[in-house]
Length: 583
Image 1 (cartoon, rainbow, N blue to C red):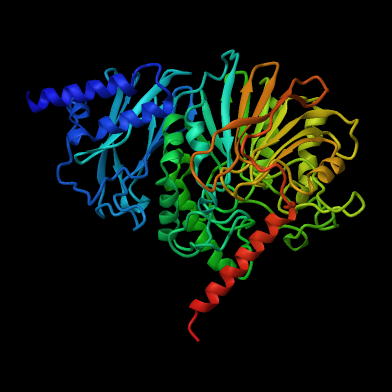
Image 2: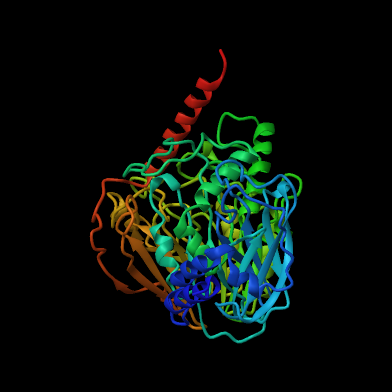
C-alpha cells in the first residue's frame, strides 16, 4: 500500500468519525485539528493549490499553539484571528521578521468549497498576530476557516455572519461569559459551551488577570499557577494572554463561534479608572502600563483594525444589529471613567458619588449610546457591558447601606441619565448583560429603584465567572438578606459557569448554566435556573429551577469577601515589589 493511499484512508476515517455533518461542534474542532497536522497537512496543501509556501519560515515548535478565533461578525464580514507563537510563554518565539500567513474560508467543514483565500502578514510589532477582515460574505451563514504558515497548518475554526440590518429575524441564541482567573480553576465551562448551539458569544471582561503566582487566592484554593510575576510590560502581558490561550477548552469555544469582546479592569489592573491606577503607582508609569496592556489585548482578540490602539487609547465601544431582533451596544466602562468615589471602598452614597459631573462612559460614549437608543427600532436594545447596573445594597441593613463604588452604584447620576432617557421614551425592551461580580444575578430594571411600582424598563442578567472565586455554592450567608433589601433583584446563585440567552421578538429567555466545581476537571453542566422577560410590566418570571448535583449548597462567604481577597492580593503585590527593590 502506498504512503499516499494510507494517508487518504486515514483522512477518510477521521472525516467519517469527526467531520460528519451531525457531529458536535467540539468534535469538529478536534477532528479538523488532527487532519491539519497529518504529514505536514498534505490534504490541506492540495486544497491550497496556487498558494505560495513560505519555505524559508521554520518554527522551533508548532506555531499555532494559541489556536484560532473569529469575531466582530457583520452581515458581510468577519474577523479571523490567529497568532504565531511556537514558544507561547517566552515572547512567542517566532522569527523576528514579517511572516506570510495564508488563510482559507470555506462553506463546508471539509474545505471542498473554498469561498475565499488570501495571505496576511504576521508582524513582530504585533506579536505575529493576524487579524483578517474577510468581506463579501453572505449574511447569517456558517463558514469554516484555517491558516497556514511555512509548512505548518492551524486547527480549523467555524464562524458565522449575522443577519442583515433590516431583515426580520425570528430567533437568536448566544452565550456570555466573563472572569476567568487561570489559577482559580479549570475552564470546563468552555468545554460545555463549545457543544452548545449558539450564534455567537460575548465576553464581558477579565479575560486575563494581572496578578503574580498565588497573589489572588480563591476561597477553594488555587489549582493552577500564573507564569511569571505581576505583569507590567508588553512582554509580560503577551505572555499572560498566551498562557490563558493555551487552554484547550478556551481554544475550543473560540474556534466554534464568533466572539464579541470587551474588557473590564484585570486586562490592565484591578479597579483602574481611566489613567488612574489602583494604588501606589505614578500616573506616568501607569499610562505606559495601560498602553502595553491595550496592545496585548488587541493582539490576542479577534478585533477589527478600527480597534487597533492609537496613542494611549483604544476604540472598543461599538454596536452590532442582529437584524431587527436585537441591537447590541458593547460598552467600555474603564477607559473613560471618573475615579471611583469614596476611596473606592464599599460605602453609602455620598455627595461625591452623587456628583452629576462624574462619568462612567465618558461624554462621547454616553452621547453615542443615547443617540443609538433614540433611533433604534429593534425589538430589543442590549447593553453588553461589565459592571453591576442595577442598584444593589449589600450592607447589613437598609438603614446601613453599602454600595460598590466601582459599579454603576458609584456613578448613580450617570445611570440615571440612561434610565431617565429610557423611561421618557417609554422603553420596556432594555436588556443589560453584566459580568465582574463572580456570581449569577437577575434583576428588573426600574425607572426608579427606590420605587418598586415605577416603570420596568427591562432586565439585567449578571453572569457568574468562568473560574474566578473558585468553586462557589448555591447560596451564600448573605444571600437572603441582600435579596430582601433589593426587591427588584429576583435571583442569585454562586456557582461558576456562563449564561445562555434565547431571544425571540416577544420573549427573552435566560438560562444560568453552572458547574458544581472548577478546582478539578470533569464537572457536568446544568441549568440552575431559567428566567423569561416579556415586556409586559410583569417583570422577570422564573421558568425552572433545579439543584446542582455534587454542588455545595451553602457557604459562609459574603459579598465583601471578594473585595477582601483583592485587598489581600494587592498587599502581596506591594510586599513582592518592595522585596525586589535594592536597598
